[in-house]
Image: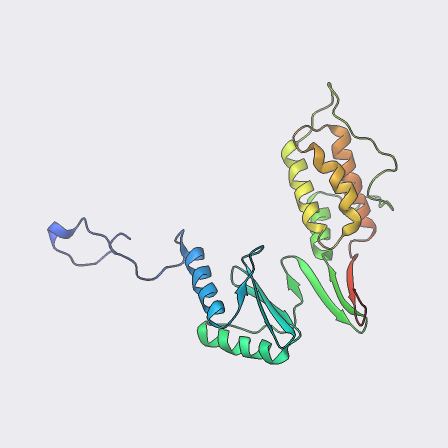
Length: 228
């Protein structure tokens, strides 16, 4: 790091720099340094880092499991071992400055609600934001995400459309499919034409948006006392 203003050094030392012993916010290596420090702490407390998702940490003991997943500095802790969850929370509070936000309600655009029936996941706000940004809030809703027997293809003289907008829309809708498996087939069709598209393909995406307008709050219910 360049010497800070006002640092008194000899004239022959003016070309010197500071060696940082601690990562600071704003540096390129800061996220990596933070995650390395967090990973070390989790392993020290007996957690195993998942090979398929490095932000996921697991601990199994006495037939019970506790998992933690982290995104930057937001964490979600899930498990069926209340004592271990409390111990983990106390341990992390000693290691880092932390704040317990209580039961999970919103994480990465996924809304979580609880009832006597179970846990319900949806992305209602995310869906409404897409409709708002695309100017489709007042569109005519439809009951299906794709027309029956729709056959999309690449035509030699097709009318070109905004490729960047199409790709962004399909990408955002694919993220929405985390809680909307009813969109999976329609998205699998439109995503085949990300680089060679025409008006017919954009119309197919617009139909998905009209379907969203029909029921933006649909989601997945993880029912209680059900053998999944």
